[in-house]
Image (cartoon, rainbow, N blue to C red; front, side, top):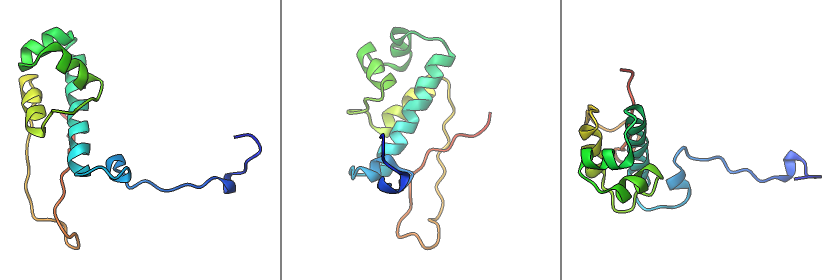
Length: 115
């Protein structure tokens, strides 16, 4: 913006979860689904699968794979995304532990580990 100084621009720090920042219901769930979709997209690309081949492998139709690849996750549950990952040869570990002290409730997150 020509003529404006940094001091003139209002900046609001993000929370680290764009879905929470936008006021989406269940923001941790939505962020986790988005992260799972990224892992699915990466697995498909690493294996150099076409969308049609990926669809056959995971048991979906090609338009649903296209939607998934483009981040359109309406209609995808976390469970369905987890099944896609395992069908693509990915191991998925679910860890449950007590919540962090000082937190009113537990949280959900996707963590990638080095292979």
